[in-house]
Image (cartoon, rainbow, N blue to C red):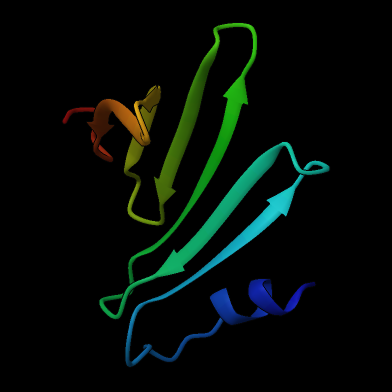
Length: 91
């Protein structure tokens, strides 16, 4: 178990939000793990989808939320858009 995985398993509340960025799958995927002070824990995966020529990002939380984003560079900015899905399946 990595240090980050141990931290996320901690039961005590944090005093401030925490996030870590990890490169995984030999530099092809950026994984972000975060925890807010209210107990919300989430994780995202970002990657370039060469088959569609677009960037994709998926976010999930311990409260059942899912956010799927797609997009790409617009000038010097990364712009991703999408829809959030709640635990009950709706927005």
